[in-house]
Length: 173
Image (tube, rainbow, N blue to C red):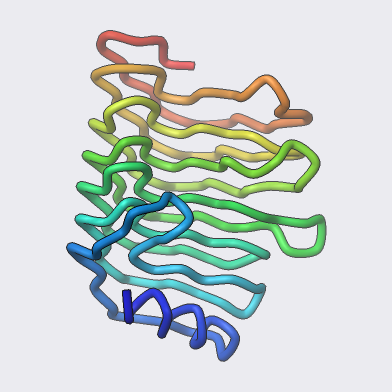
């Protein structure tokens, strides 16, 4: 969509705030309603719904205080992070997506940092963690099907701390 294109250009400049991404014609999970890459990219206080993936951060970007819902693949996806630029997903409300928060990053990347999010009623997983040093801290996760938090087999040195889990029909972790 034009908004995805615009946000990826603006991500090199820094702040993208107050955007709404909805009903984009997305045919591949590599396309998102809002996409940001790089340590200067910050997506704050946006609404993303009706896409394949609502928000995608990569290369150390920040997604904070967003409302993300009704996306078919994932609400928020962290796709790349390095020791000096870990993706940060903080304080978001993420619900009614395929996966709530998905760190589908390859196992040799660092992060993401997932903290203080409210994640509920997603179709499969509430939060899916993968990567070296992934962190889930202070999240509230309510799942009616599938795990609240799924640690992928490649995850190493993960920190899961001070989260609240409520799971019906699947494991909490």
